[in-house]
Length: 473
Image (cartoon, rainbow, N blue to C red; front, top):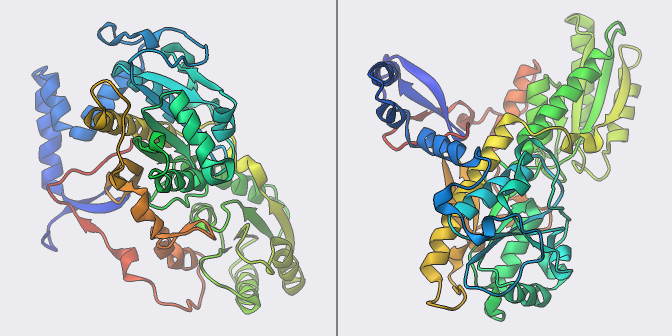
């Protein structure tokens, strides 16, 4: 426990804000410099922490033009043919499920290259389960994924579909046909839901009794078991940039309010965090119920700011499925009617621009690190449950997992446990950490009346402990 008068540094570990004693930080920094001056680079790397060591090792490995000679296997050649089922080499497969999101390609690149260095044959399943049923299963070579990290979308192809809708029996047959020993699914809520369906069907289909890991990748950030989904950071950057451009477009036009609609399904993560980043006056989401009186109160708030505070422009965000009746068009019309003649109103639906663009550095590194962690887990689990000369078979619940960032650590959580924490109808986790930021949104917008108490969690900063957290970048 830190003494209240002790100087400290506010730092970030994973998804947690922590206090670290200032003198401890100074000591660590000086130790690194001393090691560098002595040209003891191994010690300098060690002092930077395990996360830095892992990132450095991953970079050294993935940046090569070809696999290290000590790891060359038949799977390392540029074989683009359909996977053959002969041979004893273990097969790891990767596929994308759900809507495209930036970071998918970075994760696949990392999976392919690290899988090859571990001696596996790595195969890519194109176009989700549809591609699997059409035998679009290709061996992946080291050079095939060159340059993938910086490209958005999905080179493998992805579709919003569930294993149960396609047919679990058909999927099991293809898993057996292609002798898949381990699977990584990179995708959104459909990826998690499909993994859960495959896990439930294991008792009936032996070929589904393989290790499966899900890497959450969706701009909606609505996958349980992870505070952050791959792709959400890039989407937030895009939304914030678009909102800034929208507001800038009104330069010279006095007293205008913009109502913008964000994506995210029922999840209000994008609307809330984009609202904080872009300085929105309000953000309407499904998780926080609102009515016409609340909207009217926000209109009055904006009228007061424009009339008395000299503000010339306003911004209101609305999540696409925030309310069935209070649509973006309705909100815009209400602002236009009740705000006249103090201000004029314009509506913007941001659309699929939120999915596009180049992945942010955060998502590139996050995808690379998540996939690397997933391959390590698959490698260990396959080795643990592999028969002497037969297939990998395990029925344990902890062998179908989701890899997510939970506070300060990357954590593998069985999908069976996560199912109890999920609203499958609305495609939402039952608990969402970012909701505690909602009061801050209204405080920064200078609302004179805050109708609810600010949650104590908002002000909580964890104490640093001896256990080292994950650093994504």
